[in-house]
Length: 544
Image (cartoon, rainbow, N blue to C red; front, side):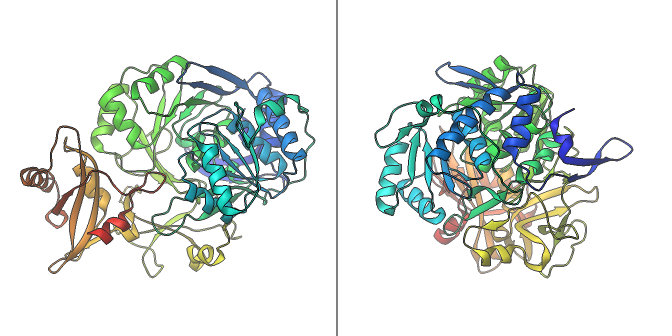
């Protein structure tokens, strides 16, 4: 029996489908001690991490290894003055040291701040100052140490600096120092309600927001791993994500280890779909999760037989029907879409490997109570568009939802107005109970009295072979209020022209209801994006 059963109660219907899941945990629950160390003591040889990189290096770490190395790292950090509540930034790409550092920080009660190696000096300055970062542990790759030092020079702060693997001027080599550290680490007092992790969201307006989760957050990912990603005991789960994003916590650490699955880590810089398939096949990956972009490249350039793969899931952006169809045809595995936010865990999904309708977000997670509300806070009818909100239990406490925005209580209170958590995302529920994403509320196009979600347009645009990337926005129109504009990055071999513009319009409009017709097409070389790769529609609307 997987260790996760100790921390939750599951209620099933007569068909064996999970209907409700509630958590149970001690007031001092700590993922490092109560999951990692317990697994290490009970099953020391059980695989935790299977790691490889593009240089053909590979390592397999057991839970006993993770306990040992996280203890050694925790001792080094503690001796350097890092303690409960201190904020430590991790910029470790897909290096295996990330997992030791995460668990070490959890044991210390310090707050982990995952960050991507793509951050600029300006990005780093903002985060270091906003979070009052006490230490940084980083990769030596991609000139990250140099950018960190430049940022620190601007902030006038002096966080402790560690790097891993290689010596770098101005940084202490944590990999070397921890080798001589004690591999035992007595339990420190932490509470389940203490802050665990701080994510900076990408945001499409203003500076990124600091999202804080507590120590209960890992347990809320039981549903993510067990019932959506279908990670299994003694299996090998592979989520494609860099450790700087919340997606890594969704698919590379908490839920997977709780259900007894090892995590596959492929350390790469440049995405190669064929190499990805080779990794899946060579190491025997059993469950796989990636954003639709990865699947798009797989079906175009890298698909081949993957005999060990049992389940595939996706989230984060639009999934084109053609990608779903081709992947399923090749593998026999449906792509199970899911939905959630950095502020939450998995809210909606196609569970248990079943897709009832392609393109749907599926049904509500048994861990949450979800409603669709109109602008007045009233429930909408079936088929009507409403905002996705989380209705907390009667006691008002909803595990899995963030506990605060960093130094922004007003914004936190705003998203929790009316006693529910407002996601800001729009959806509708059909007569079968399935949810369908309709875009961000501020991205919805209002044209001729109709409300049109940009995803509806973008889904069709992506079917044209000349479209490699696209964005649909509403622009002012004297007749319709807004007209639908398609902004397009063309595929290789296609050149912008009036003829191509007309061709794309005709291609799409014959597949769209008249009120959804594309009226304007603009060709661009690249899209304005956030650091996490999300298209900034607000900038596109300003430039329109």
